[in-house]
Length: 505
Image (tube, rainbow, N blue to C red; front, side, top):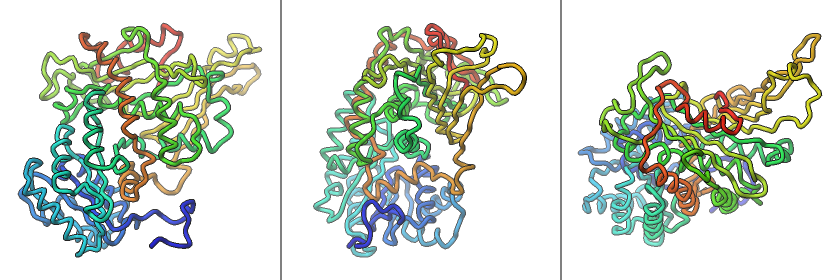
């Protein structure tokens, strides 16, 4: 029974899930150790998990519960955001269980189903379970079919709710995405499917909605009358790490542009929803994704790049073709820049320049709204030669915050105007540190809030943007750029042809 004194609009009390189990497939992998287990500990430390909460690990290891607890302890201590509290850990660790087995092992899945049934009586969990797919995308169908065979995905049979969390990439193109959507919606009901994009769990990404719709300052100029262009940049200073097999088969466009960056573009471009109901927010994002237009000439309106050896942060970096397990003749891109448009009244003729790359000078993700220059400047040209576009820059990571750049007179006897910046940083403005993205998203899954999770239509529409780009690039080689540079020279030339330049991130 719910609290009769609490309404859905009351945000003063934290959202705490019902008693439930979190089943993590691939629990020994990097994602689980670096993100999921620390997120679970941090949620427990903040008092946001119910007393009847169990973590079930499933992986191909000959382990018992004690081995799993040891791995989880090391992962939680290394990755926890909140202070370490032994009493919290002991309560949480007592609810860890491990089920060994491979994804084609019927007996292992039967054991998993029996374990979940036991928890209903022993731990007071009324059949509630979320299944987290921390596994390679190729294994999704196998695990989904096992969950269907055993009835673990069936809400009615379990006596509670059953939800599934699927990590990106969701498919490899439109055709595979549609097939996977159909399979997962057949095994689970569509409202119980959570397609996770961890970027949407970041506080600064969610702040885009607050910045736009909670203030009257920005929305009146958030359109083609005042905006010259929009730049969305996601730069990483690292290489591909241990992801060689996956990355070489995917590339930057499929790995990041299809999900993270198109979701950011949708949040920047969307109309105001009537409420923050998940269906309303998704409907507005989908309208933007459907309105995206590709360059008429993709060869001129996009650039693919691949990093060569160079220097990043004072350290020698090998080229992509010298990375371990990468074929020496690979044509996979590690950098993509593309000019997109949004064909609606708000954004007509406003270019959206989107770029993503590895082995860049530094790690940064930001959205820059560049405004048109003032229509009449009663200044001598020399007075304003240091004046650029007014800019509103939303820094997603690592220095989360918002920067507003505008012109101001330089103190002195002459009328000289140059750019200055007003800088808001989350870390300075708020005493509480921002939760890690996976904290928010795991909690949302357990309480059943789908606002920050793209649905099948959004995923498929994103692939309709990417597939024509991939087709146009099929027989081309990526442009080279040195590690430690901001991408190929052709990327700068793409903007220079329109009299624009990339913002220095």
